[in-house]
Length: 449
Ligand code: SF4
Image (cartoon, rainbow, N blue to C red; front, side, top):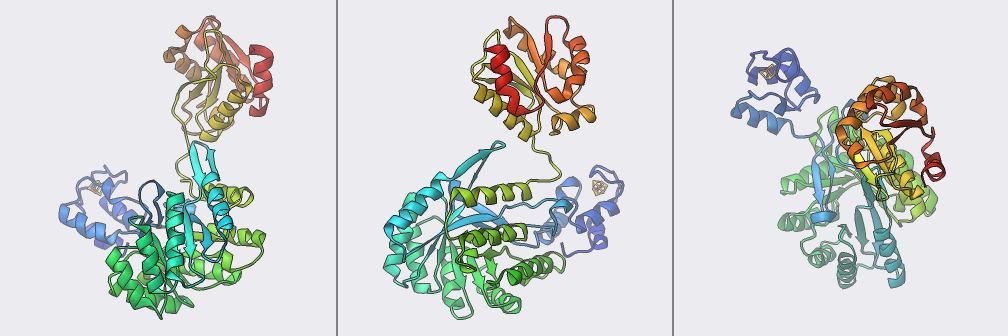
């Protein structure tokens, strides 16, 4: 945000009504200026002020959307340097490269892996985002044909890679309405690439050698009417890539330097021939602060690690991942099935439910809302205790479905047994289950099958 806190304060109602969660309009204005508050938190801002402030509060790093429909993803839109200051909003896009000098067999194998490598974790599907199609031959027909093949075999986003506007135009036509990202405009081809991107309303990568040249190029492309830019400072040595990524992010966020206020693209496949090192570089770029990373290939060994690293970085640190409080049915439970209990921290829920599923023992799983805390932390915070868990079980209606009424509490929460027994009454037997989720299948098989 470019306006100072005092300038913003002048546009606020100055009633100090506190509805925005802070005691005064001045405090709210200061938070807004620091990017720590949302304008929508004040219901009394006039339409005129809203308009001025909204324009000024656009994120310092432009948000760019690539692809369409289910395959679309966004990059950029970031507002902070460090995740713990607020959160990172749009996760790094992971792309796999195919080139028109590769054999059909190689390309088919890569595309097959790209589509297959998808993982369900904590209720989310983790997978690659885009296929980067590169022209090595410079032959526009070959490029168009490869692009068409990629479009037919995947619904994910497409990145077209050539510095020839003519070859690029053939790729764009082959993409139809898939909204590809064009890589790349340089000082030499900027006019042709900008014309194509503007005409087709497509996002464009600006590539230059060094940050100063890059800033000049983005200004030129903006002036030509292309707003949706991704930037590549041209560095291919890891230490320089690291420095450039940080300088770009700092310039955009701390210095509000608009010519570098765009998401970046990093190409580890151009940095080494060693696939393992390529992935080490990708991992570093993921941490600081690549918008898109293009890898030479996807295998289970490399992409799973990067997807998990990305999941950790792009999870909102201020909002615990949690699941809904309810009684879940696993393996078709019946009137004699036990009721296991756990907290609603997503990871705990998915690990526990996964182990119950593995046991094949029909069971109920009572998930108590602990505000996303794990069992032990929730117990320490007074959120996974006998009376709360008992109250939830009593109100859930599960009792009426059961003939045998067995509750199993996690081994780590054994101390709540007495309170829980008191709360649910003598109709129930409260058992202490294993401490580790991994021991649940053996425990269930031994006691309930
Ligand atoms: Fe001021 Fe609006 Fe906050 Fe009320 S809600 S204190 S008017 S900024």
